[in-house]
Length: 300
Image (cartoon, rainbow, N blue to C red; front, side, top):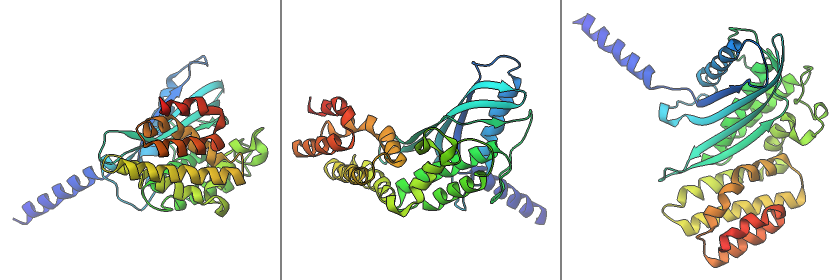
């Protein structure tokens, strides 16, 4: 009898572990078409990066498999010398919208300085508060950036702890010879990882956390049940970005917002009330005048 009880407990534990999941569901792709030579290390690299992002425990929260944050990491390798790779990367994060099958893009980031060294069969391990190597730092940095964007979209300032962790990785990596970690290490300072993390922890730009919550939780998540007030919240969020952009132009966080969200603006406001359409176009004329031909499509 006692044996049967322990077997039952063991099976329950196995089932419990089986339904637990880490936070990220990241699909990694490594494009090595621009380089020649043995491509076997590329597959090993892809597998190692995938395991690292998807099996590392990044938060103290419990996630069910279906709750994992869907994201994409696309790495394009442009040169290789021994175990040293020159590359650029794109990081895209999506979020489901309540009561719909629609997924909205939270961020669509590019990193033109995604250079790293990787040894065949090298397994990566994150150590909090320690700089190990550039590839571990890069992947960990973007893991926390992904978490920051996702958590911000569900609760007010929910992503702040993870943006702070990303900034910590920037600080730890800033003394390395690798590019992209400091303002001085890039011809375009606003494109650096330093600028990205700083924009989301700097108190002067804290409105962007409110924007994320208002746009997603109070806006998109209400569109199926209350589209008028859903659009109202979205318009308020966009207006908040316009105010920030007017006071401090050329911020990375504003560009990140527009890169992620402007493609869906037309579908959101095409069925809006006439006054909402006019208000939206007025805001975009100030915030993103170069794309007005696209936004004017809502009037057709």
